Amino acid sequence: MQISQLIKTIMLRMIKFFSILIMVIVLSFTLVSFSPVDPIQSYLGAEMMVVSETQKEQIAEYYGLHEPKLKQFFKWFSTFVQGDFGVSLLYRQDVLTVIKERFSPSFWLMSFSWTLSGVVGYVLGAIAGMNEGKMVDRVIKTYSFILASTPAFWIGILFLIIFSVWLGLFPIGLGAPVGMLKADVTWFDRLKHIVLPALTLSVVGGANIILHTRQKMIETLNSEFIRFARAKGEYGFTLIWRHGFRNTLLPAVSVHFATFGELFGGAVLVEQVFSYPGLGQALVQAGLHNDVPLLLGIVVFSTAFVFIGNLMADGLYTVIDRRIKPGETV
Image 1: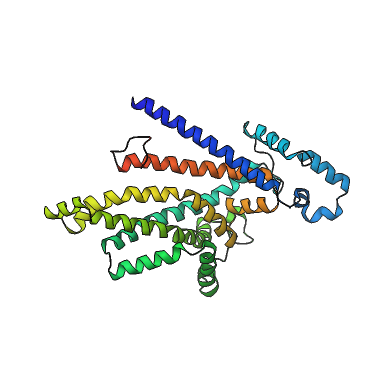
Image 2: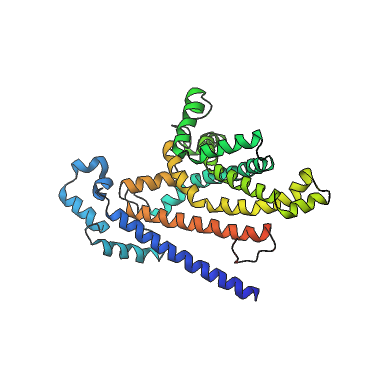
């Protein structure tokens, strides 16, 4: 019975994933179709002045840019289902190659910031909830409200001014030192360039975790079973460890994994501020230069990334709370 339920859950999730994926692809292609940017001009760049009209026509014919939009979409979709994402007009490379090169920096950026925001956010939220109404609670709550309403790019610019320009502790931008060969770049060099972008993402993303965990901790500590535990003689950290953390950790995990989509969106802004060579920056360039194959490829990849994150959350639910069965929602 459990196996059949698991198979049913997987099938429903896959149907949901492909339905969302198709809708996202159609919407993205439609929006790009209304872009005023000339893809041929973006492809040629500064060399457009020395290219004849005949050559422009040949480029347009080669990429099928003169075909009706609907035909272009079905032509791309037919190759997509075969695993071919096309060639990027901007980078002159296969789309999957561009995504592979750009995803690695973005992955480490998002992983570091996501982990940091989750751990720090949960700890601060739990501390604030355990000290409701006290000075530490008011300070943490005020801090969270300010950051929750602050744009990520503004925090990034502020960090650049303070830690890069004024103090000179970190590089101003990019993913590696300027003028250095890729083979000569060390892990320490990459770490110095990733610290400020990751801190920017984690500071902004952790605000919601703090506020949510704080509220859940307050509700838990005011519940009937906590009063019963206190009546039995439990108090202090033992009470919080046995009852408070268990009942607040699962909601915090739910909220944190739900921020996968916001994390990717925040990474796009942060990578622009710090000129970080990740997938978000490639997405912005693809949109500005009307690079449809690359744009759709990144959209597909990001959709799958968020979906996998939600699946991981469902798996962690059963680990944290054994009462939850696979396929159930919180």
